[in-house]
Figure 1: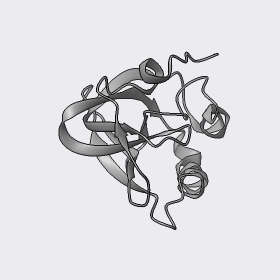
Figure 2 (figure 1 turned 90 degrees about the vertical axis):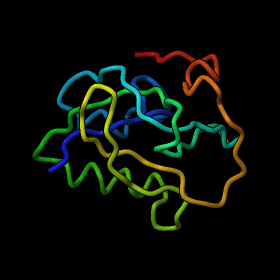
Figure 3 (figure 1 turned 135 degrees about the vertical axis):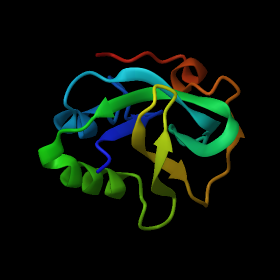
Figure 4 (figure 1 turned 60 degrees about the vertical axis):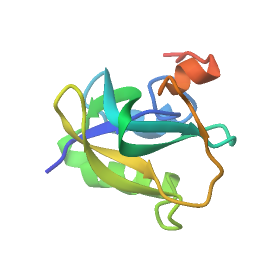
Length: 128
């Protein structure tokens, strides 16, 4: 069972949706990256397409085993997987973890983020 989650946008530590993820993690996240491209949706959050030769920068968290399914259900709803905006998939992180991540699905206008890092792109830094 996959018990890690890679996040690259507003679910990162201290960002606006971090409180959704915080109750389900076993400890602090570690800076990590995944092969792919990151995009700005123009809506205040990014989108990633994995497996495209560049890097998406983010954090990998170990999820609490007892609440993995609850965590994924909460995040699936938040990421709008039902309507196909994003889809949950597994990725291999550069630190060697098999992790869940949310990949862009369809329906948005995207602008590439060359750095692959949402925080660098927005100039925001986490508050926690």
